[in-house]
Image (cartoon, rainbow, N blue to C red):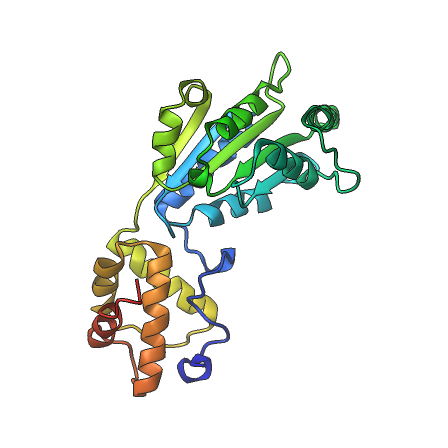
Length: 268
């Protein structure tokens, strides 16, 4: 609606996982580096946590996008609210078994064993990412995931499991001692700093095609304070501010517009 008014080629603050719009902060770079280390060094399990909207899923997708398919086989579980058989079937489906999926758990495990051994023989390491893992309530499902880490040769694990979720996932794993002991890489994402928030906003504006200043300097502090530096919240505030500014025929987004937007209880 407001693209032409502000001079954009596309919407700058869509809450989608488009990597070109994401401005990686120092902590995001560190998180990605640790995840990359986990898969490249064949670690058993990595844990990435952060509050809602902090960029966890985008980090995982960026990791997968940069893994050469000739060296890595990949499975990404977006919805972990499955039973133990369903999640195993989804894993082998994403690893390439699309026809005649086995129904029985023993048959599924046999097929998974064949997949992992074939990948190993071909020089491919298997990476399994479980997103929104904090939603898992069944301890038996956590146990099923832990048992995946028993697939190994004498010198290396046959797969790397990456669990991604909100902060409560850390507590759940901590109370599952056998699982907790298998986690070799951990990282927790926090909100962006004020400087990172500003850089994030300006980056998205540039990618969208902005050719002039749009947000007044004072707005960055107001946005950071109201969003806690959480990227998804920043997107919501900035998007609604641009819409409000368009409606007012404003030349730039000022603090008053930001304050009006964040006062709306539907914004954050």
